[in-house]
Amino acid sequence: MSLIDQLVQQIGGQEVNNLSQNLGSNEQSTQNAIMKALPMLIGALSKQTGTREGAFNIASMLDSDGDGQILDDLAGFFSQSDNGAGPSILDSLFGGKKAGVTNGLSQMTDLDPSQAGNLLENLAPVVMGFLGNQKKNQGLNVSAIAGLLGNEAQKVQEGGQGSDAMGFLNNFLDSDGDGSSMDDIAGMLGNLMK
Image 1 (cartoon, rainbow, N blue to C red):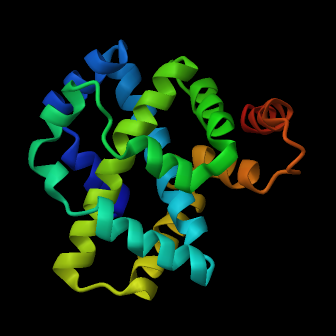
Image 2 (cartoon, helix red, strand yellow):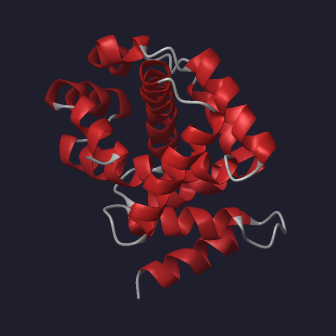
């Protein structure tokens, strides 16, 4: 079973219900957005682990933000307004492109940019907690974590659910760096709709 499938299993009916209320969205829209957001987060993590420095950065984040305790009460976490380490995790993953990634997710879903940002902030600690659990329970080192994320990203890119979202993310993070995310997003989404 893929990492994303395992994560989706963790986020069941009550969790989606609480997250939907938190976002101010309906459950169907939230569920659809989760299926776009998770590949984006996995893709960003995989991209970071592509360099030695990035891989050690992710391993360090897992040690500080990935103790797995968040998985014990996801419904409770999703019902509160505090997104925990979510904002800082997104800053580490996306840097100055966070707003562009959030807008891209918004345009691929029924969520507005504020809701999309809130969703990413809610899901980021869950992904880190899940990976932290894997690291601890399976004794994974830095290269094993990088391999795990790389394999998952490749599966999604080869046509798994969320391949459009991951494709957008990869193209966007590799874009021209001119500081204008909106023209990059428009171009990316134009390609997605073809």
